[in-house]
Image (cartoon, rainbow, N blue to C red; front, side, top):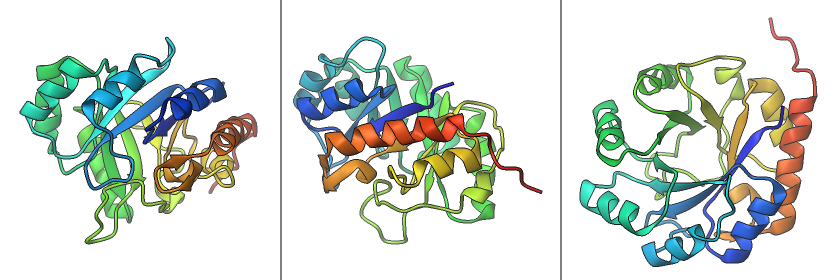
Length: 222
C-alpha cells in the first residue's frame, strides 16, 4: 500500500506540477502572512484550477475567522480545510458545519502529555495532522523543519485518519513511516532549497522514500 503524501506550501505552477507528477495525494496552499509560503487568494485559485483530478487541494489557515474562510472557499476550489492554529474542538466542529468541507486539525506534539489532544480532536475532525509543536515564541505554527519524538505516536490508532508531519525529509521519512506506522505524511520545508522554494528533485525523492519505508516490515517494539 502506497503512502499518501501531502506537499504543503506550494506557490508556483511548476511546484504543483512537480508534486502531482511525483505522486502526491494532496497539495497544500498556505494562507498565513508570516509564512514564506503564503499565497494570496487569486494566486491560489490559479494554482488550484490546474491541480490534476484525484489530487486533493488543501488550504492551511491559522486561527482564521469566518469572514476570511467565506472568501477563501468562494474564491479557491478546495477539497479540505487545514486548521493549523489554536482552534478549539468547538471551532473545528463549527467550521465543518459551516463550510461543508472535510477539516484537518493540526496537533503539535513535544511531549507525552500532548498526545491526549489527538483523541480530543480526533472526535471532531475528519483528519489529524500530527506535527512537531512550534517552539515558544515562534512566528510559524508549522513548517519549521522540526521533528518530535516519533516514539510518542508509535503504532497507535485514533478515531480518524492521521498524517505525520514535522521535520520530515527524503533522508528520514522512510524511518518515520516504519517507526510510527503512518499511512500519510506531510512535508514542506523538507523539500525546499530555500524557504518557500520547492525543489522538484527533493519532492520526487521524498515520495519515493516514503513508499520505500512502507514496503519494509515495521520493527517490533516491546
